[in-house]
Image 1 (cartoon, rainbow, N blue to C red):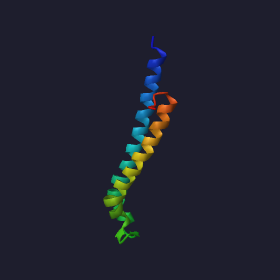
Image 2: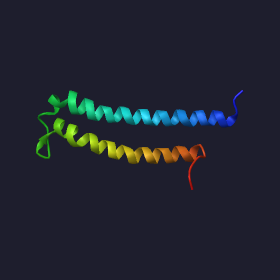
Image 3: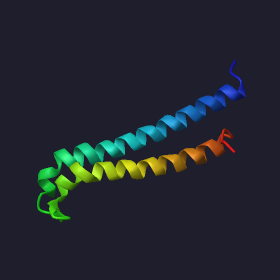
Image 4: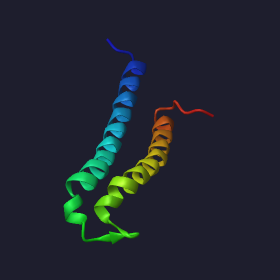
Length: 88
């Protein structure tokens, strides 16, 4: 029989993996799908002197990843408080 602490730990880990998976899928979508696969579709749209597909491949994926770091940190802080494992 599992203790409440084990169940809470499993729920925390499951929520953490869910967040990581969501962020990885979003980053892969922007970097691979928008930057590589959809590049020909975005070729007519100009952003900063380059087409949008090139921008996604060169700049967009990095910027999305940096933004995701801050979003993930905020979400993990909230999750830590929810499961009472936060740092003071």
